[in-house]
Length: 98
Image (tube, rainbow, N blue to C red; front, top):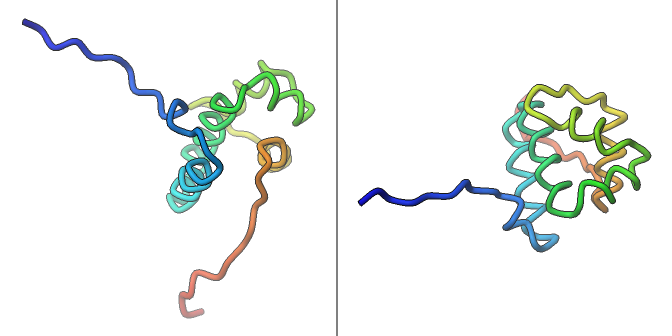
């Protein structure tokens, strides 16, 4: 008998501000812009892509495109999405010697 599986969707588990914060922090720690853009897309889906697009002043289609695996969103788009998600970007030293 074959094992039945279903696709994993991390957006289903982003149901609290703490979960969203941890998810995005992990993505940012990767230092990979594609991973960060993907994480923002997952969070936007979890919160409602249409509402996030509207709050960011973007079309839903352009937001999907910008935050897709092949997307390369401009910093201005990333900042709009972060604000629309009710988040803020902060900076902290890495404690590496200069």
